[in-house]
Image (cartoon, rainbow, N blue to C red; front, side, top):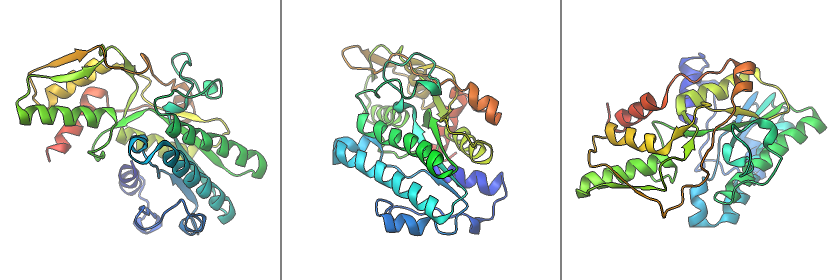
Length: 291
């Protein structure tokens, strides 16, 4: 996500490169309050993208993921307030929503229940930031906002990510390499998700940085439900894998429906994603192949 926001700022907004600071974990560990304070000095706007992914929970432990994400966010939030930052943008996830919330997911549902069990440490760390931005606005008048993003995909993803699109791409590549008869889909394939192409996500985040200054979190998504079956079939076609999918209904497929209500983002930002799922997956695969 960071590289796409950087590209957008440089090419679409004309922001000078020396006005943008993009530290990496190897340079600055934001879990250290002093380091976080150093990172935001002389900054006008902070877009908090740093994150320990949910997939790390199985490797490093759920407490590490919860603590790491929570402390990074809170450190940056407090450091930004103390440094006189003009605006702080916190990036959240649709996993924050209660697992039994009605569809489509509206911002007012966020505090009506607990997040689902699958990614609980990760989602709760993001929910901590939703609360933090709201409280800092109330007590200090600090202009902090929280954005809730749909499932992102597109060029530049971590190849080892457990996120759905990278995981399917890896499975197809392995099947082609090993001449396997098919790939395996979990569940029925009928579960739906809200997928957002990464360049559209970057545009939504920057638009919110420019235009949105309210207490309530704001959904940034496509607002479209795409069945997992359609996603996998599109990737098989794009990667020229013709041997098909075998659906294993003994495997869990998570929530049967998940889609964000994006009406407020349309109203507040004029935000409308430009890339549909078929074109977005095609772009992703072309970039993967160096085209």
